[in-house]
Length: 322
Image (cartoon, rainbow, N blue to C red; front, side, top):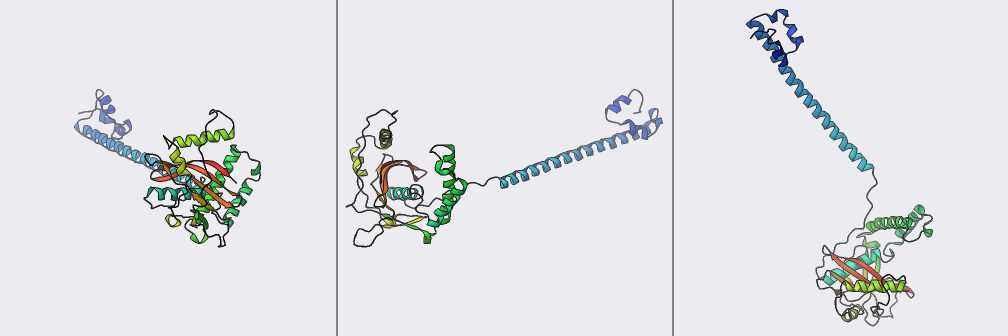
């Protein structure tokens, strides 16, 4: 094949550069087979160069993307390291009981100790650190009103500070405070009756609204006659003893029944009622009285619920306070 004016455009369309053609000399246009061979060599060299350039370009682009991904990963890692750390949460105390009543009492007491008893289980030094930090961050906290944004922020920080101290105390039995378990049937529990509903649900009266909440709590567990449930909730449990509890932030012992023995009556003492389960044993009602001195104490009725095998307090309503 000779390079002529008729087929020049065809070869040029195949990618033969004019500059490369010019390198073999101007006589190429009218030459014979030798010129055709040289022209084909030029085309082949150009094609090989083009493919090499494409491969190099692809490698270059790939390398650029690789650098970009690596850079993004490093940036994200740095941002994560520089971001605010996750707040400390309360450690969960393991419970090995399979008996449903022992497991319920054990897990409910842990939650009461750590969430309902005013952090009295923490050592004095830990509580002092919490108070000092709260005072530093919230010097005007005494002016906060419940349900305001400021109060909610204060409560969040307080819980985080308590969680830090709970983590430090966890399984450090030498620093545990003592909780006393009351099972003396002669003392019993403060009597309880299910309040009658006398006003509509939209009432603004505080006591009437409390009565409505207690009745609602009952209806989630007791579906028929409430008299048996009331009897159970007024009966002090005595079958569970301190050895049945598995605590990680406090120790528990029996409250003395012999009044001739010296005893600090201001020590925290808790008494439990018997348990009222629902039909599937996934929810339950129970009461407790907590006393911390002659005119110090309160009592609540609890609705507890089992989630993933563990019991948690879902709702608590105050019955008395002193």
